[in-house]
Every structure is written in structure tokens, then in C-alpha cells.
Amino acid sequence: MARGRVIAVDGPAASGKGTLARRLAAHYRLNFLDTGLLYRAVAARLLGAGGEPHDAVAAEAAALSLDPSDLKRADLREERVSQAASIVAAHQPVRTALLKYQRAVGRTLPGAVLDGRDIGTVVFPDAEAKLFVTASLEVRALRRVKQLREKRNKAIGSRVLAEMKERDARDGSRAVAPLKPADGALVIDTTDLDADEVFHQAVRFIDSKGG
Ligand code: DC
Image 1: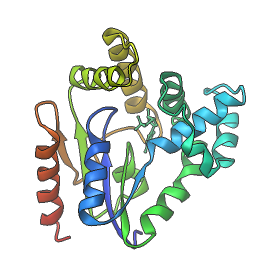
Image 2: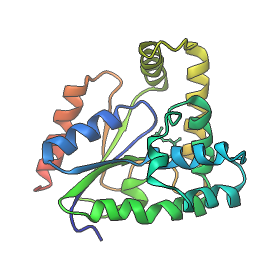
Image 3: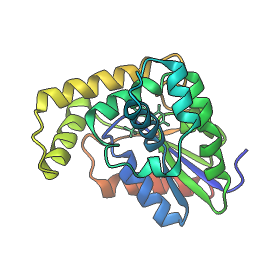
Image 4: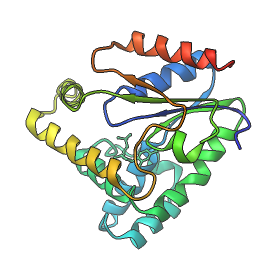
């Protein structure tokens, strides 16, 4: 399926998958796609038009009318958009609408590192290497609180933890493309690892695949 090199990086929010995926893309000189941004853009577009994230028809319409400028919206990381993204992502028609674009990015030479929830299981099951990056819920919530504080946002730890738990549960239990490690994926638990250790583990694994 893939023509360029494709490296799939999946995992829950604040697991460190984005940091790792960006670094791998630079290391192997590949393109990079944060697929979560696509779901966030659908959600932001829908909310902006007064739509309801549980409405599958409206969510599909938002996905089909997505414009590149939607990926640059300033509100994509807001909590209400995060929750709505997790809800629209459970609708199969939304996922189908976004599939073609994700595959096109992976097939464009020289290839790409894609990060998301279902890259190794659904989007590129034949990826050259699949990584599943995870960490404990508590550590991920602490990382998110720290990020928000750096942005001078007043984050209440317990609220961040509760919202993350809610999103994990929805992303992991939905009927379509639930978050789970792909067959043959290397699982990296970053709870007690720093970004360098995660990167070196990933590179050793990818290089052992003959890339
Ligand atoms: O990675 P993120 O937190 O930016 O993703 C936002 C939401 O999008 C997440 O709650 C689940 C969904 N998502 C998905 O279902 N599949 C992907 N490949 C990427 C994200």
C-alpha cells in the first residue's frame, strides 16, 4: 500500500508520541503528519458552525468540507475542541473522509512519520515500523498541566486528569478504529523515560527492521 517509507506512531494524549514522531521525521528526513490535528479541525469547524459533535451527519459534512486553512486555526488545542475531536472521531464516516488524505501524505515520497491513534492498525497496517507510545494516566495528566501552565493557563490538575481519562475511555472503547497497539508494534511506556531514551529505543527498533 505505502510507496514512500511509512513509520506509524500511535498512542494516547500526552504520551510523548508527537515529540517522538517529529524527531523521527527529522532523523529519517521524512514528512510528518499529526493526524490528531485533522480530527481537531473537523471538530472546530463543526463547533464554529453551531453543530453538535454527536451528530454524525453534520460531523461528516464538516470532514468533507475541510480546508487546509482549518488546520491552522488558533483554537485547535482548546479543551472543548479536544473533547469534541474525540467525539467526532468515533463516527466511521468522519474517519473514512480523512483516510484518503492521510494515505496520500504517507505515499508521497520520501514517505512520512504519521502520529495518531489508528495509524498502525487502520491507516497503514503495512507500515515499515509501528510504534505504540504510552504512559500512565497520572504522568500524562501532569505533563498536560505543565504544558498548560507554560502557556499561562490556569490548569486544575484534577480536571485535566478527569478530562484525559474521559477522552482515553472514548478513544479506546469506540467501535471503529479504537486505540490499541497494532500487530508487530513496539510498545514504549514513557512513564519513567525522557524524550532521548524514547527516541533511541525507537531508532534501534526502526533500524532493526532494515530501514
Ligand atoms: O492526538 P490528539 O490528542 O491531537 O487527537 C485528538 C483526537 O482525535 C483524539 O481524542 C482521538 C482522535 N484521533 C483519532 O481518533 N485518530 C487519529 N489517528 C488521531 C486522533
